[in-house]
Image: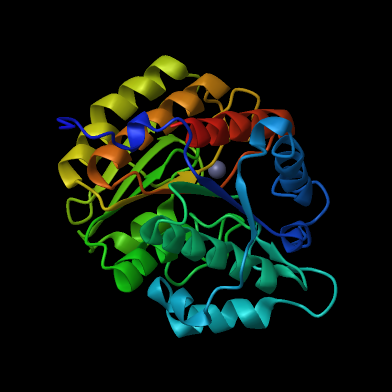
Length: 322
Ligand SMILES: [Zn+2]
């Protein structure tokens, strides 16, 4: 039989979605009252234990090959983080960012999981993947740990896709409510990686204006405080999606922070689970058109446990559904 329109991934009922996690992500400790706390991941783990997530392909986050850290950071940054990790107790790197004895392992497993997820989607072991890890990564600049972040997981994974799998164009889409200054910094001169961010402005870390465009590869879509779904979707449709289509990525990496949820205490953007479901679908659409469906999503922020877990649930269900 002649098949004029062979089925694409978009027509397959269920995607093969991988989930990376590891108990050590609960052992990266932060001071009492700190928003980026182990309970975040307990809430995510709990929601992903529901029956709806039985089809997930679950895997323990492997340790990253340390060489891959150098894809985004110079050796002196890597050794500074390593030296900062205390044998007991906790040590502050800056006013927001702390390390404890297991932080090195947690950070390396976060990076290792993102790299492994990239391998999975390029080798056909999964259609897409979600990395449920902490610490987050998008504030980590080339030479600076900041904003709860030690190494820039999404940036390293993007370079890993280029080095290990010959990807020419990798897009990072960051819908965390804070601008990913670190990812922007790392790729400022590198037009092979597109960085698109929606974020509240003004807000920490202060970067992310529309006129910050790097080598033409940085697309910032700042959102005013107290806006919500409509403004977010308009910005996504007007700025992020056209840039993505034009760039034709071989892989989409999502810096998936869920602190633009209306319940989040750190910002004033009023998104709901439905917005994360929608945005996930739009990115999957783009990935299936340009990147054979390849999409890797890495957890960034999200500090209200109910908002975080229900948003992760919507996001991962959409990844599974296609
Ligand atoms: Zn954030």
